[in-house]
Image 1 (cartoon, helix red, strand yellow):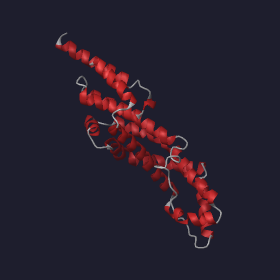
Image 2 (spheres, rainbow, N blue to C red):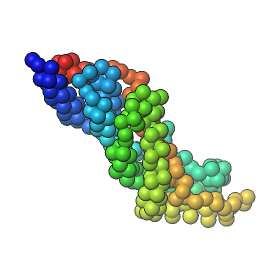
Image 3 (cartoon, rainbow, N blue to C red):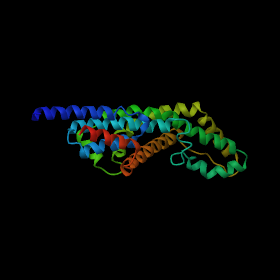
Amino acid sequence: MTCIGKRLAGRISAAGMLLMLFSVPALAGFEDFFKGVKDVFSGGASLSEGDIASGLKEALVIGTQNAVADVGREGGYFNNPEIRIPLPGPLQKSEKLLRLAGYGAQVDAFSQSMNRAAEAAAPQAKEIFWQAIGDMSIEDARQILGGGDTAATDYFKNKTSGRLQELFGPVVHDSLAGVGATRYFQDLDARLKALPFGESLGLDLDSYVTDQALNGLFYVVGEEERKIRENPAARTTELLKKVFGAAR
């Protein structure tokens, strides 16, 4: 085979490998796709930097979709102790007093409704993440692949935090009202002020839940990325190794 023919075959093989890589179902997990692309980056001589950047973008699209789906389902926040939105500080201080006064059920309902509001808002992040991925340069891809444990998460924070705040705010506001959190909060505030030694909660509920929702979302993305970098033995990674080995 001529030198040109070999290069052409290599490009066709590279395209075929990327096609096979991204035909794996999204449920396979963020870590599998990211690790597979990183293996190609470190050992796949047939792939150009453009191929690698495109592959990483596709992997991150799938990964962020999975992360958003995880926190955006019912119980995604509330059932995860690492990202469950806690009672606001002023209410935590008065929680015991409210429970002693017989308002424990209202406190519990308020806690759950805050988390439900965050779960309702989370799917809005997907398009913002995908836009940031689309804007990613080859240099960005190189730094992410060679960066620290949360290099991709840090990239997303830097590129999306402002837009996510703007997008989440109205959705959280409507969700809080829709699931009853606003009503529970106002009721608890009124009851607390009526109790001896009680005082107003004095809280911007929309801002509090929005901030907590975004913190939880980035936490999940960061944990997924950490697993990617620390666990080279993921199930689909073995399949990808076979695919790339056969193509070589």
